[in-house]
Length: 245
Image 1: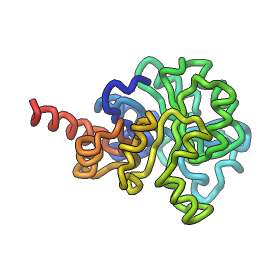
Image 2: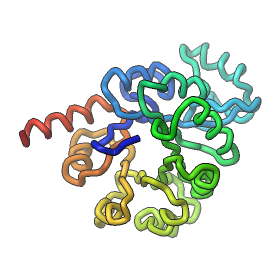
Image 3: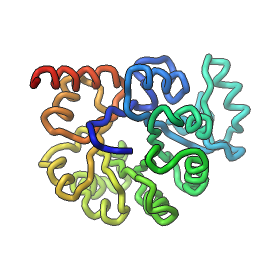
């Protein structure tokens, strides 16, 4: 993934433009509107399938306690299908960069094997809130581009966690991550400038308001944003280019 321009990353596909996020339909819409990358989440089913899904449960049943077949029956009844990670990879191949968020620990090697079976390292990123997952990925293959996610909703260690997100240098060094992806509320106190000094591109999540997009992309000049509305973000960038032309 070359960061030779500001990246518009479609959050769970173009999730704000379709009925069901993290689906092939959402991926198709992201490509249709011109997104640079697709972010998706992965979890593992009871029978060992790595699938594309954000939440830990579906209709009150934990993903890890359901087989992929049982899960497919439930989702099909609601008009959609959760793709496997391999299906998502194959769909994205030769079309768009895939940005994979690990929602759990323990099967990093399986994810890497699946991705590298079909893609070269320039065609994917792996991101996580979990430092140990990122460290493990780099031990397996230092050429894989990793992204440290910051801004966990319920921090385990409270204020300590928040401070490590606002001032993440130690975590950046320990994980050897290639990029940092903070929640937009963390982007203050010279955040972007500090990370640029450490040569770490900043990919901000989840930016859905056009004014906030403008602030991040134009004023703060971040490397990219993750958004449910990639079409709006692309328009913001285009309008800015016109205004300075």
